[in-house]
Length: 306
Length: 282
Image 1 (cartoon, chains in turn purple, cyan):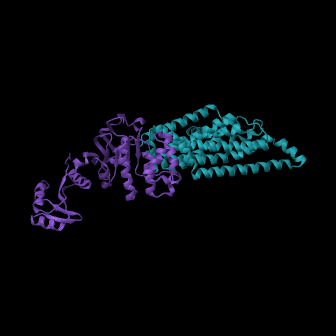
Image 2: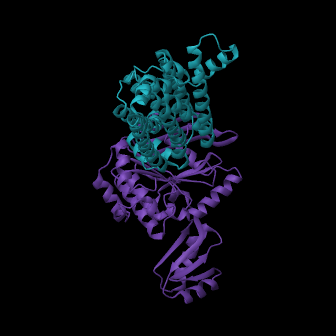
Image 3: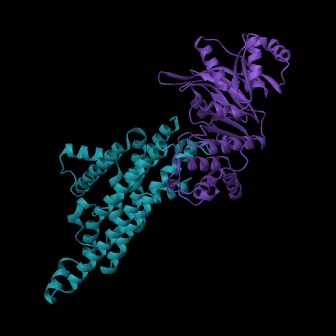
C-alpha cells in the first residue's frame, strides 16, 4: 500500500458551461476503506469520480492519488475503474479483452483473472463473445476484468447495474474480498441497500457540494422504534399497549414506537416490568435510505450535517 | 493499445469489405491486363508492327497504371475516410474511452494508438493494391518503374494528409459530416492537382484566377501531391507518351518540398486534433 490518505481532493470546482458540477469540494479517503459517494442525480458524484481519474479536468483546486497529481498517468497505476455504461466490442471474448487490457496495464496474470471470474461465477464464459451474453453476464465479466490481480484502488460506477439478486451478492462478496486484500474501494451507486451492506464510509453530495461525510454508523441515528424479540409476541404487544406504547407484531417479535428516541431506557424498563420472557431488545437505527432522505431534506434547508 | 486498435479494426465489416473489394479489383485488373496483353499478341503481323511503333510495352503499362490508379486511390481514400472518421467517435460513443484513459497511459498515447490504426490498415491495403497493380503490369508488359522509394514516401504523405484531416474533423463535427467534408476536399484537390500539373507543363498560359485557385487548393489540402508521387513513381521510365498525360501527373515528379509540406501540414492538423482531444472531458 502506497499511502494512508490515498485520495486527496482540495477545493475542487468544476462547471460545464452554466452548470456548476462541483463547488469548492474537498475530500480525503484513507486506504483500506470501502467508500461510497451518495447523492441525487446530477449531484456531481460521477464528475468527482472522473476527476479522480483525470478523465475530467477540474477548473480549480488540486486532486492527488498516492500523492501524485491525477494529470500523471502514474497516479493510475494500481487503480481500476469500471464506468457505468461501457460497451466492449460484441465480438470480443473475456479472454481477448483481458489480453488487450494487460497489454496496457501489466498488472495481473491469466490465473488471477480466472480466479476472479470463478469468484463472480463467469469462468465458463471465457471463450464466449460478449455479444452473446446477457447484460448481467457482461457486467460480471467487466468486474472480473477490472478487479483481477491486486488493485490498490477500485472505482466502481453503479457496479450492480443489470445484475440479478444472486449477482449482487457476488458483487458484495467481491467488494468485501477486495477490501480484505487491502484495496480501497470507491462506489458510486443509487442502490442504497447494496451500499449499506458493503460500505463503511459515505460522502453525501448535493449540487456539487459536500453536505455530509463519515462512517455509516455515525451518520445513522437512533430512531423512535424499538424491536423486542420474543416468543410471546401477542402477550407482549397487549402488555405494552396497556402501558401506552403503540406496537406492531412482527414475525419474531414486536415493533414498538417511542414518543422520543431518548425514551428507549424507559421502554426497556416497561418491557422488564411485563415479566414476559424476551430474548432481546434493540433500538432501531436509521437505514441508509433514511439517512439519505434526512440529509437531503436538511440540505434543502441549507443545514450542514456533521 | 495500438495492437488492440488494429485488432478492433480488422473485425469491422468495412475493413472486410475493403479487403474483398481489393481482391476483386486486383482480380479484374489481372483479367483486364492479361486480355490486353493477349490482344496485342493476336494482332496481325503488320498491325503489331504498327502498334509497336505507336505504343511500346512501357506505354501500354503506363496506360494501364494511370487507368487503374484513380480507382485504387478512390478505394483507399474511401476506406481511410470511413474508418478514420469513426475510430475515435466510436470509442467515445461506446463509453470505452474513459476506460482506456483510466489506465496508466498518457492521452497522447491513447490518441495516437487509436488514431494510427486506420492509417496503418489503409497504408497496408494501399501497398497491396498499388503493389498488385505494379506486379501484374510488369508481368504482362515488362518495364522498369521510375522511382519505387518515391511511391512509398508519396503514398504515406497522401494517406497521412487525408487521415490527419479526418481525425481532426471527427472530433469537431459529426462523423458523417467529417466523412463528407474530407471526401469533398480530396475530390477537389485531385481535380486541381491535375490542373496544377497542366500549369507546370504549360507555364504562364493559365488565367491568373485559375492559377491562384489551384495554388490555394493544393496548399490548403495537399493530399493530391502524394497521390501524384505514387503514380509518377510507378510508371515506366521509358514511356514516350507522358507529355500528353500531364493531367494524370506523369509528366514531372512531385517536388520533394511539396511532400515535406504535406507531412508538416499533417503534423499541424494532428497537433490541433490532439489539443482538442486533450482538452475534452470524458
